[in-house]
Amino acid sequence: MGNGTSTLGTLWLCAAGAGVIPAAAHAAATAAGNAAQYPVRPIRVIVPFAPGGATDILARVTGKRLSEVWGQSVIIDNRPGAGGTLGANLAAKANPDGYTLLMGTNATHGIAPSLYTSLPYDAIKDFAPITLVAIVPQVVIVNPALPVKNIKELIALAKEKPGALNFGSAGQGTPGHLGMELFKMLTGTQMVHVAYQGGAPGLAAVAGGQVQFMADNMNSALPFIQAGRVRAIGVTSLKRSGALPDMPTIAEQGVAGFDSGSWFGMFAPAGTAPAIVAKLHAETVKTLQLPEVKQTLAQQGAEVGANTPAQFTELIRSDIVRWGKVVKAAGVKPN
Image (cartoon, rainbow, N blue to C red; front, side):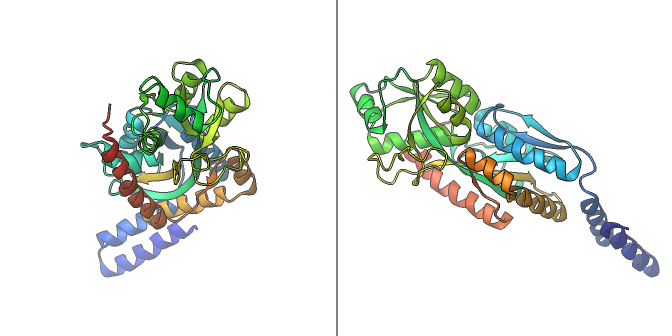
């Protein structure tokens, strides 16, 4: 018998001797049994952005490996819209049985609480954080026809033509949007934001010339850069990316202290049994620490997270404070 069955049997015998099964003991035994057997059917991972973007890529990389370990399908369910908050809300309201998870981001949990005055979920109370999956720097990319080769030239052009340049993002209030709002504040430039429902549509818009530039996650932008469909001009993190080691950061190019990027993490709905959360955490962290997974993520410019639920919660709390200041200073409003 497995551990869950043994625990249940022990509790049953003790309760039978007493003439009654205490409700709390029965609930604990049921949860332990469920966790021991989990998962017994396919798991759905909600991705709150369109297919092909960074969130989607990371969900598929981790989901594929977890599917192999557990022998159960991991189904990626893309639910884009409202800067990721539509999908996040769907996950928050899901049955907390461990079979609906969320690949959340700092857009859905670090930025949205300040951006939306009536956010339909609480970024802290409505979720059980499992682990930070990855931290991904962003890269500023431009349409090849735009006559700029670096950040200084972009700033110069924006100052020469105030309000004439437009930039895309994966959605209102996403890291790519807020990062560029911070960029505008620090450089004294005026540029127009155009929101899309995910990084992939935004990338296509830059390549097609519908918008002139954007800051997008390294792992989703790399194929476009390598194919020559867009031109990279600067990395948004404080340190250079191993995926583009010769590309200087925005801070290196004269915008002192500029630091922006994205993180991605796995969540379950609040109320999910702690034993199931612990099992999800252990298996996800184990997956992220596999050499082949680390290599895959490194090639995409992603740094493995793999922290504890408590550490992940602290990251979310600090991001809410950090990006709340940018939202307020820039006067950013939801669409």
